[in-house]
Length: 131
Image (cartoon, rainbow, N blue to C red):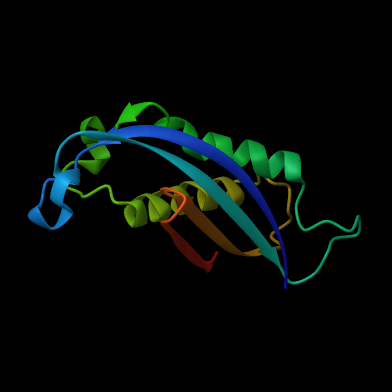
């Protein structure tokens, strides 16, 4: 298995209104470093997993609807806890849709995708699955 990973970041605001979240129940901001890893079984005829430029653009496009947003005001997140883990899945779904639409020109070679969100220098979460 081969992989290429690209990185971006998003700044968001949100609250996590349940006692289990302690002080994060209140409105707060977060800056997430976002890593996206694209996995293939083999390299293409040009020795690539995926074009890094296209992967970077696809990740940026998947993140754009979240940038500088108060996630408490995003209608599709109503009633949901926008935890780091939840956001991993949301971003993976958005990026998988871009891949399925042909945005990476990968000819269906990408088999697996992993999204990792670094919440801080000591905590991170990820979602990984076959696509």
